[in-house]
Amino acid sequence: MFNAIHVTHEAVHKVGGIGTVLEGLINSRPYRDGVGRTVLVCPMFYPENPQRLGPAGIIEYSSLDQVYGGPYADAFQRVEREFNVRLAYGRRPLEDEPTARRTVCEVLLVDLRGINLQRVNALKGLLWEHYGLPSDRYEHIWEYEQYVELAAPAVPALEALRLATNETPAVVFAHEFMGVATALALQSLHPQRYRTLFYAHEVAPVRRIVEHHPGHDVMFYNAMRVATENNLYLEQVLGPQHDYHKHAVVQAARYCDALLAVGHHVVDELRFIGRDFADADIALAYNGVPSRVITLEERHAARERMHRYFQNLLGWKPHRIFTHVTRMAQSKAMWRDLDVLTALDAHFAGSGQTAVMLVLSTELPRRPVEDILKMEREWDWPLSHRVGGIDLTDGEARFYQWVQAFNARARNIRVIYINQFGFDRQRCGQRVPEDVEFLDLRRASDVEFGLSLYEPFGISPLETLTYGGLCAVSTTCGCTGFIKQVTASKRCPNVIFANYIDLVRRPRTIRDALAIGAAERREVELKIADQIAEQIIRQLPNTEEEEARLIQTGYQAAYRMSWDAVAERLVFPAIRRACARRRSVKVAS
Image 1 (tube, helix red, strand yellow):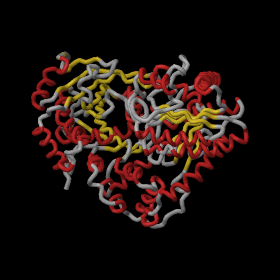
Image 2 (tube, rainbow, N blue to C red):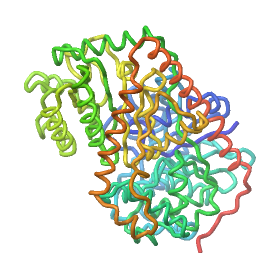
Image 3 (cartoon, rainbow, N blue to C red):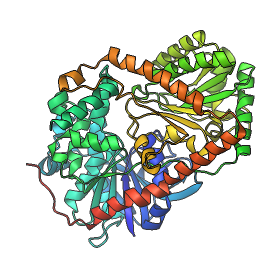
Image 4 (tube, one colour):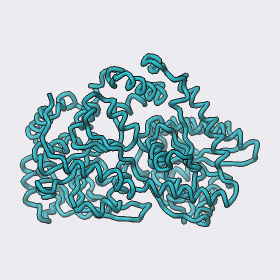
């Protein structure tokens, strides 16, 4: 048994996919059986908030609150004096809602205001000397600077927690670029006591390229294929990336003992970064998928609850319920949803069926209930929105314009856009029935959309799988590789693959691949939209027997993709290899 350290920006507040990964992995049976203590490390983002560890957290030490309890108080005070920082330490529960499992984790937060920059600069020198990380190039970027600053006091503070010995090293999970500096610092300063894993939830320079290029995924993955066939690497094909701090951090992450890649594309993208990754230990470690048994009666009850919501909101009940729960980001390619809905609307017009597409996506944290009630009362939110103020941000407003245009043209499908985090009466207004909860979206959904142009894994698009819903996902999503793995590449009736990458005429040269622009990509998207709509019509259940069959096949696939299976088969073998490796600090040439 070993102790684990997770360096992440979601140690207290869940804001995205990494928080979901932490909940699933840490509560998996192999993790609970194999890990003793778990410590979450993070900058203190909200020093003014006395609930530093969240509403259920218990503070044992916090100089900001004059709490000096626990066995580590003297050591923490020495760290604070030496680095001129404030520490908060305590415990908080981490719950995985799909399995109802709950694990209490230790949390270490560092208030970086006024930190001793001489100590930080000494660490930057070490990171340059050992790993070639040029911190001086990115000191003006706070997103970079705060995580290097975090590493300096985090190392002695973690040492004070006595998590590791030479015989039983602690395992450090560097979640994305945020954790790399701390992991590498521990690796250099205490080489025998720590083993480090870079948890690649994405490859940041690739995300930037895919999102910004007008050809998006259609261009990039064709270009990467041609480049790989010709032994070329990212900067040779797409130009220098040294202006981007995340690119430099990802390059340095190759010095970790192992790299966990959440999807098959991520493995290829890491190898594509440069020749230096050829010898890196990159383990394919897909994310887990929620797995729960549900009866047909429970699914029907959830649909009835959602129908009452639509009756309250629209005055009618749809035959079909479509959903998309996601972050508001360019990579989600949400215009592709509307392409498919446009094609579906033509089918539904002929059959007389109706549908509602419920989109939950926001650029902000959860809006206060008083704001939701005000918008609902004054301008009929979420049927109507206003730009600015307490309602739409700029990015949300752009999507809402597309929704308005679609609703003006469509005859049988209506899109409802909810720019809120979560779904129940407390979060989404008085027209939500009191007995509705967020999971009703998953239980009731006929189709969950996930047609992203960059999606290293994509847990959310598969969350309806275990409840018998259909999942329409682009093959750009890493989860598609996992589905094919667990089904031995046999067709899963619950999953519809949208392959945007291969529909374009196969480029033979780098120049041809790079020439794929918005026009070619748009042509592909419209063709795929028609194909996906036809598949949805074919695969939607029309009888209770067909519905029950989808519940069974969906659960069978989800069970084989659970966090228990992922931890046992993928994550822990990589950890064991890292722990067995004898340490010798590598020095950049």
